[in-house]
Length: 240
Image (tube, rainbow, N blue to C red; front, top):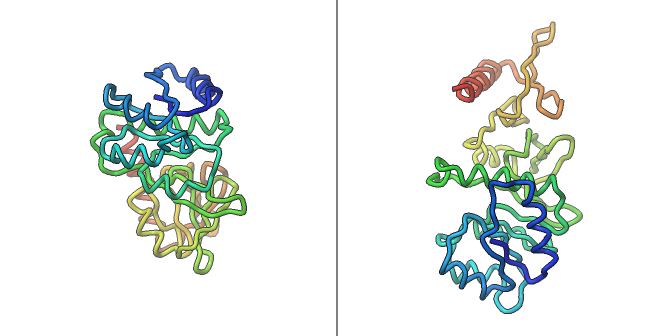
């Protein structure tokens, strides 16, 4: 279901969805009142929801309906300042207009994962981290972050070759991300296991992980055995 007071925005979502035939548009709404009425008579799996709409806005829709009774929500808005509030409502994603095809495809991938039968009953949601940049709030999904390094009282989050600072120490952040596949490579670095492309060892015996972006992260001698075992275990699980 698509909810936006601008016809052009609704049409844009339809056009982007055309590349994903497994998704069918169940209906369109122009305001929050129409969304609430539609959710009483239909049960869409996904709701693309604008925030600023006439009368009842997107947040008020969720407040009245309650988070528990909402489908998977993808906020679609022209403003980035509502990102933190959006994820407090347990939204699956937050798209800022205009949305690129690549960014939309990433959202669809997360939706497909959420909507798998085995995933619907899962209590673990797609974890996100909100960071502040010079352009405002940016939402990072943990499956986008390749590795994290310590930067004093901050943590530096790497998405490919681009980095973001988070005002949280690596030690504190580790408690949040370790259940999502991150493991210590050395004292100052955490690596997402499923982002490891290869493990190598130098002639001098030093070990390092090569990530999908090509970045090489050293692995300390005291952690190399556990790190290697975790990578092998993940590979074996994926092969089953």
